Length: 372
Image (cartoon, rainbow, N blue to C red; front, top):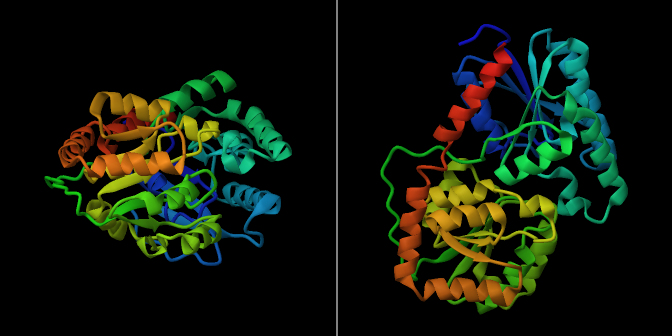
């Protein structure tokens, strides 16, 4: 290993509980010799964190959302970085909402900065009807991304787009699970009891359309494992649905609970709003979680998913979020158990290519640059 800086401070705006991508990245960096600190925020309902091979800290804010939260959090994060970093450390900014604090702290301390874009930030559904807010975040990225010494993102499509936009090389580090060592088989039948959606219950995730589709889906219930900004709306729609008895909300699950839920499901759901460029070029972690469980996925016909599906055939792609189209796709798969089994087997084969052991190799090679 090269000599050089050993401390790296990774910064996010979430409360760390569900951020499996950063847990994997921080764990890999720690195993490679970095002294890693992962900084997030302490929310009013944040559960305690589990033990990790790196340090975690959470900053408490007065405001929990909106412009005042981002202003306060970046101020607190900057002060914390200023007090805790020294010349030669590395500061790792995740998404545009940590860029201001991370860039200023890195510049003033003479440190290298990493920028990790988990999404096409200005093209998320939450900003679709907020042109002023979009322009502010766009200006933040335009001003501060050029200072990054190293840039990552989650898909090849986003790497190309962001690279052209900011005249920087963006490397792809996919958000994929570890390949488990035990041999996993996934025999399935049309009698398995549920569909599974895991993750954020936010705008543009197709959950309203999925609930509208449920009365037309034969035999399967739906488990929604997660929480988010539109949970009240989604739960209200579910309570008004003729299929309300088949729609189950579990809230956030531990990693072990979620893994068990995923292995027991018949089909995974990864539906996204086509109008969102952030979603259109995405490569969601849930897609790979389903894959590693040997579970076919109902997914959008977006470039990154199409590329993988053309090679491995791990699920069914649909072009839009019409409830009738969702129901038809699921019902057609349930009526063809032979195809369902083939897709399950293909998922397990594909998991050997799309696993953290492979992505970690790229991360380790790139981190050598930061050691110089």
